Amino acid sequence: MTKITLRHDWTAEDVLVIHDKPLMDLLYEAQTVHRAHHENNTIQLASLLSIKTGGCPEDCGYCPQSAHHAKETGLKKEPLMPVNDVLTSAQKAKDAGASRFCMGAAWRQVKDGPGFDQVLEMVRGVDSLGMESCVTLGMLNQDQADRLKKAGLTAYNHNLDTSPEFYSHIISTRTFQERLDTLDCVRKAGITICSGGIIGMGESNYDRARMLQILANLDPHPESVPINALVAVPGTPLASRPPVDSIEMVRMIATARIIMPRSRVRLSAGRKCFPKEAQILCLMAGANSIFYGEKLLTTGNNDADEDIALIREAGLKVAV
Image (cartoon, rainbow, N blue to C red; front, side, top):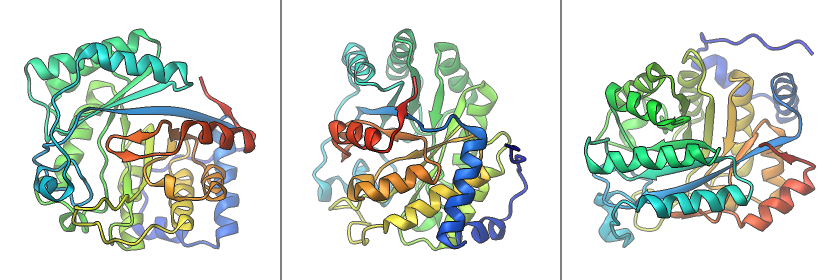
């Protein structure tokens, strides 16, 4: 099968045209692109652990870990986990079938010192288990990115969240450009990029297309693109947002697959609310990775046994 040419010159209008195609045509194109660039019928399982929970000084409207919303959400600040506890969790995730272990710390930005040194030790430990390692620690500078690379880090997660135009409606404590600057440091360090966004926050379809456009115009494309549906957590400013329609998630995944053919597209937060048929449609649309385990940082996720049953029912095999 002829492979699709990689592009880095998308306009938001180009992306929106793809996103708004008749659903059957969109799914057919996405599946065609997927099969041209990836092993058929395989899925990566990634496990996510909050290694430092709550107390984040950012004011992201969707996040229960923000110190700005702590009174309303009731989420208590917790210290950085001990290294051995994290590595025990990583081993359990590996034993359950996960090949990537992701660690999230509720920091605005990385600060040099004992905490960061502990994270570096965690990364070395996960690497020694033979797993891909990923961290999300907020903003970081070039020296910190280089140190993470030296420790053996596989990927750094730093989501764009939404379009630059809608961004200020969600976050005021960090600029969109600062997110891009962090991704630039990660890329220069030789670490792969994990970056995607969230739908269901009140943004338009154009905002969704714009976010995907910016990701697709990075050269090279992000190796991993997580697509999240908003989990409207009580106590956060976005608590009253209606649930995301599952077909909107399917469209986002299919569009991401078409314009970033070689990236892993990850069906991420919010899928717990979707019926299994919708989740299978997302996999058909080109998602080839899921977060696996009962919790994503502080929000619920699918039951692991249910996921294994879904994978078997879809006829997929787990990537190792």
